Image (tube, rainbow, N blue to C red; front, top):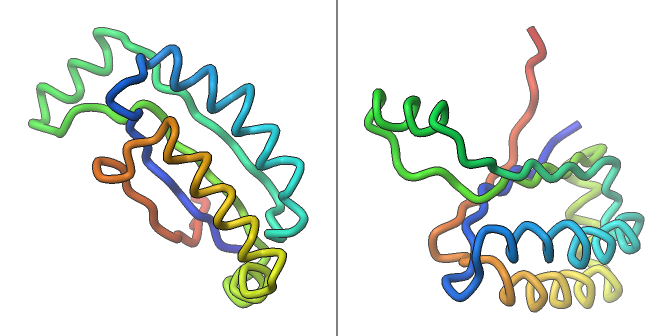
Length: 120
């Protein structure tokens, strides 16, 4: 399996609470409803919580500011994902997801990448 990981920062006009609420209660159900089209096997949202512990890690290591959340989407294979998203229905869905994301995610300060897990 492969996994799409997206480290997300909120749109500048949203508070963290607004971002996380929309992501969980609007975008999340929209994604779930269409997961089969993408051949997604699992979808997890990890919402950042503000805590002195996080600030300590960031400051002690000289790291960049925290993201507002991390999305993880598992797929059976890269070929399956490419095939699903190459279909007419997949392309329509990709456009709709991107348009929705633009309302709450700042893509210019976020990132995404494909990973393969190695469980130890």
